[in-house]
Structures are given as structure tokens and as C-alpha cells.
Image (cartoon, rainbow, N blue to C red):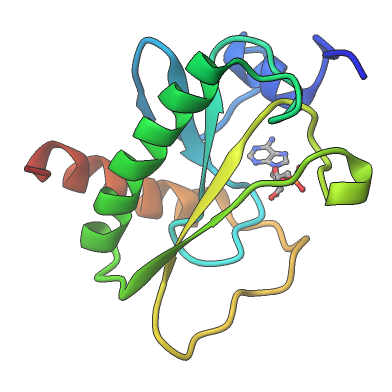
Length: 141
Ligand code: AMP
């Protein structure tokens, strides 16, 4: 399986389609999932091509996990969360739909189930949630 340069996250990285960006560093980008399964659901991706964990380099995985941890702290604070769920899918049989490596990071509250997949959120709501995360990020110790 090879990397498709026209996958939707590659287009986001090239600024060819919009997204609600919340954080980036040299190696990774974080933006709001357009169909969030919880308020504050973000995606962490490497800036360089990787289809999924099966072809990613150890460096890409390490960069992504450092950002996943940073965003986990930010989501705990921004949403007063009780915990964090991290999801990651590989190939069609593994549940992957977009073929650029990504990690889902979701703030969770005890007893609150994830929403069903496939429901598009309003852009203004995604922006409000992104604002909360962007505010929390610089306050992390
Ligand atoms: P999966 O490949 O199964 O991990 O799912 C891909 C995820 O990407 C889903 O949660 C979608 O809601 C999300 N997604 C798809 N297109 C976009 C987009 N243009 N902007 C943000 N999130 C997206």
C-alpha cells in the first residue's frame, strides 16, 4: 500500500482545503475533527507523508505521540475532562478511512459515551472548541 498525495489530510497540509487548526510545530499539525465524536475531538498528524503506523518512521511516530500528549493535557484543561481517549486506525480492515497517519484525541467525561460517527459539526461550534484548546495550550506547565 502506497501513500496517496491526494488524500484529504495531504490537501489540508498544502492549504488546499480548510480546517480548524489548533496547534502545529515543526513536525506535526493538529486540527478539529469535522465529525467529532466528543466536544474537543482533535486529530494529530505528521507533516510528512505516512499512510499509517505500518509505514511510518519511528521519528514520525515519536513526534506525533509528543503532540498527542501535549494535546491530551490541553483537552483535560479546556474541557474539564475526566480522561482522554486516543484512537488510531490502520487500513480499511482496521477502520481507517483517511490514508494519512492520524491519531484521534478525545476528551471524556465519566459515564458519557462517544457520539456515533458520521455527524458533521457546525463550523462555528468547531471554532468555539478550538478557541478553548488554543487558550489552554499556552497555560500548560
Ligand atoms: P479514520 O481514518 O477512520 O480514523 O477517520 C478519519 C477521520 O477524519 C474521521 O473522524 C473524520 O471525521 C475525519 N475527517 C475527514 N475529513 C476531515 C476534514 N476535512 N477535516 C477534519 N476531519 C476530517
